[in-house]
Length: 488
Image 1 (cartoon, rainbow, N blue to C red):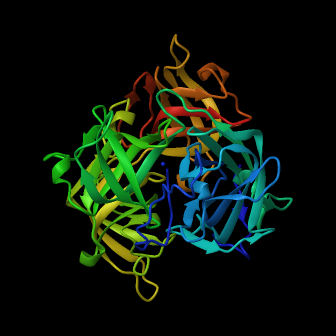
Image 2 (image 1 turned 180 degrees about the vertical axis):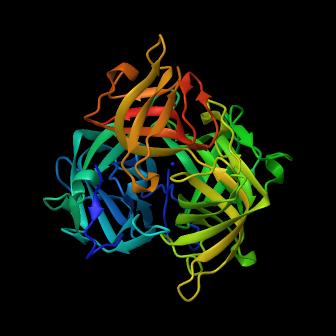
C-alpha cells in the first residue's frame, strides 16, 4: 500500500481548497453567458497513500456539444480555481455553477497549470515535506461524459468528475513514484437527492466577508465567505442549520471570522449549510491566523498534556504564505490557556473527549493563534489560542473485527493505515447504526484484500479501555467512523 517517493527525486470538504491566497474577491458561482440551463460541476478523487497534496490550478473548463459546435465555457481563465486533488478522498468539491445553452454534451475539457506534488519523508524527525512539479503528459485533458449530459431549458443538472489520482501517478517496479503524471478521470451526470442535493460539501471553510439575516423562500439568511484561493461563495442558511460558536447570534458575527461548514448543493444550485461553526477571528495584519493541516510529531509533558506539535500546513486563513509557506511545517506551541474543540461535534457519535491529552499523530486540526514567520531555515511558530479537531478520511487495510452487533453495523474493527504518519500502528474504528457503509453492507463483509477509506474523527486515547462496544488497549488511536468505504 505504501507508495514511497524516489528519494533521489522527491524527498517528499466546495470541500478542501488549497490556494496561494490573495483577495480575488470574485464569485465561484458564476452565471456565465446567457444560457438557458444550469450545470453544477463537482469533483472528487481516489486517494494515494503518502501523497499529501496534488495541487493544480484549473484555468479553464469547457463542455463539448455532442453533435458538434464550439465548446461552451463554464469556467474562464480570469477566474481560476486551485484545488488539491489529494484532499478529495471520498468527498466532493464544488468547482463552479454555470449557465450553458440547453443541449446535450458528450465531453468536458480542463485546462490546467502549475501542478505541485507533495509527499512527506517520515524517516526524518520531525517529518519533512517536499514539493516538486510533476511531469504531466498534457495540461489540457478531455474526458468523455457517460452517459451524455443533457441540459434542459430552465433546468439544473449536476456533473460529477471523479479523478483517479491513484492510477494517474506513474510508479516503477518497486511501487516508487517516478514524478510523472497522466491525470485520469471519469465524468457522469449527477441527479439531485432529496436531502443532499447534487453533493455534500463537508469541511467547507472560509473567512466571513458579510452576513445577511434575511432570506427568501426557505432560506433564513446567508453568509458570504472567501475561500482559500480568494473566491467568494454565498452559503444559505435555513431554520434547520445548526449554528455553533455564536454566543451572540449570527448578526454579531465579525468580518474575518473563520467558519467551517457541512453543506450541500441543492437542486437549484444553491449552497446550503447544515451546520456552521464559527471558530476564531483571523487577521494577518495582526499576525493572527488559522492554520489547517496534519499533525506529524508531538511533544508531551510528564502529565501527558501536549506542549507542542508539528503541523504540515495544507490551508491557511487568511493567506499568509509569504510568512508560512503552504506544505511547510510549523511548530505549534500549546499553553494551559489553549482551548480544545471539535469542529463537527455531531460526528463524535462515541462522545469522546478532545483536550490536550487527546491530540495525536495523523489528526487533521486547525490551530488558531499568533504566529512568528519562518526565517533562515527555522520553521514558523504559532502560539495556539484554540485548536479544533476535524473530520477526516484515513486510507488503510482491514485487519480484524473487534465486535459486531445484531444490526451488522454497530461495533468496530481494526485496520492498518497506510500513511507513515501513524507509524504503522493499528487504528480501532468504532461504528454505529448510523454509520454509512459503501462497497459492503456491514462489518461482516469487510475483507483484508481491498483498500478501506474510513471517514470520521481521530482521537488519541492514552488511558481509555473501552469505547462503545469495543475494548481498547491503551494507549490507542481511535477513529469514530461516520463512513466506511471498501474501495473496489
